[in-house]
Amino acid sequence: VNEFELIARLTQHLPTNEGVVVGAGDDCAVLHAYDPDCYLLLKTDAVVEGVHFNRDAVPEQIGHKALGRCLSDVAAMAGTPRDAVVTLGLPAAFEASWAERLYEGLNALARRYSVAIVGGETVQSPDRCFLSVAVLGSVLKDKCILRSGARAGDALFLTGELGGSLASKHLTFEPRVREAHWLAEHFALHAMIDLSDGLASDLRHILEASKVGAEVLASALPISHAARLRAKTGASKKSPLLAALTDGEDFELLFTSAPGNAVRLLDTWKQQFPHTRLTCIGKVTPGPGVVLKTKEGVQPLSAHGYVHFS
Ligand SMILES: [Mg+2]
Image (cartoon, rainbow, N blue to C red):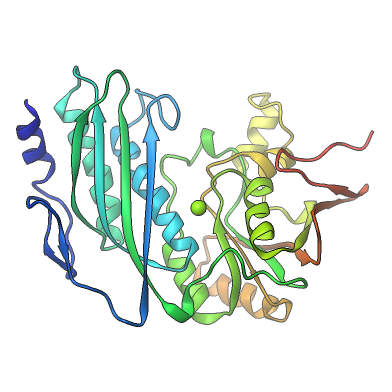
């Protein structure tokens, strides 16, 4: 098929929503302006063959991951994703059905969150496929959660489990959009980020933006089954704890809130999201720096992990 035939196929069943005046097919998408009480959120992200996925990956899952990464970032602001545009780079020799399956994964995730796909571009790419997604979202001005609001004394919370994602869920993770909304609606969150590079690395973004430090409790970290299994079978040389701290692609939410909220937060979360863990993993300190508290004592935690006591 030629490019125009492919575009016709890919744009045939794109998800839409009530905010779309003109979707894919004109020179630009035309969207209704949002509520004046909202900020707009804009985010782009790309996945590249050989870096974020392999050619033998399930194409639907590649589409899912590319959009999911952007939705996870919108979730980290407690926002609502609204619209997306997609750029697909394809080598000359490719199967049109592969691109169609990729779009099926993209569309399915978009539909679940009422995200309209309102346009994009297919482009020839010399030897590798890539997929770039840009997402427009909105958030009520008084509910927008930045990285910069953490305060010394805050409790540090984490959704889900950490580690081993590349061997398990990185192509199928569910962005925490609903969870973030619920959190922002019911609790005063001070700072939030989604974990893409690993806890030890992403935590520092909150701390640097907020000019504070943190103490992380090693025994509290929710380590995934995949991370434990990989350590046990020798598939990974990292200990489960190190995997939880430094493996990337978790796409969980890390946030801070006043310590007085902790009990009610953990209790009501359990009722609201019985299948997803929420864990208090430590606290924000005046800083500077991050320390990891283990049975052996307290040691500095770098972006790459920690040094074992000898
Ligand atoms: Mg992010």
